[in-house]
Image 1: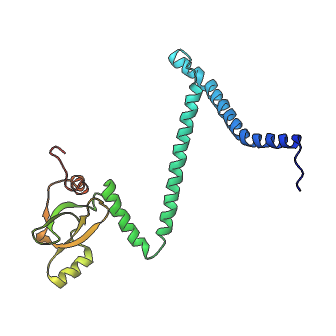
Image 2 (image 1 turned 90 degrees about the vertical axis):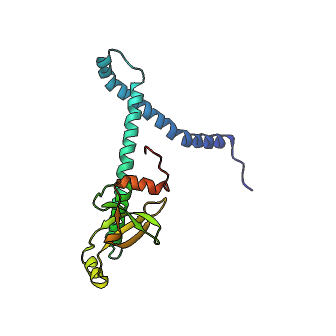
Length: 206
């Protein structure tokens, strides 16, 4: 049978448990107050010279701004490092590297417009059947050696057109269209993407 703990032992255990809970909180508050007072002492005189009066709590405000700024820098730095680390692994894989590079380039162009040369023109093509028209983007007008090989087989020059899906502009279809069947539209890439993502809902003046 377990012997009951004496009153002294129980009080001691409660005291230790309370210290373990409160010590980190108290120390954190103490460090914050000390930091705010330190900043108040350093920045206070300069603020007084600038505006001619003291501002209570300038240390608190400064401390919060510095803490938030440190958090932003740390968060962005860590996120950037993690992304770079992930990309470095992917780009070392022989089969995935070219696919990843192409997809990243296309995604950047669609979402941020960072590569103006990738999406060359906004065009209309009859797709997926005659009489039905789709908005697309010319991604290549010659396709290099691939285009030459295709032309030698079918006797026509084809243009590669990327038809973007609605409402997700990062997916779509590659359509190879005869050059004479591609109709250029005089609107910007941004306006065309807006048309596609909104499922055609564009009001006058947009």
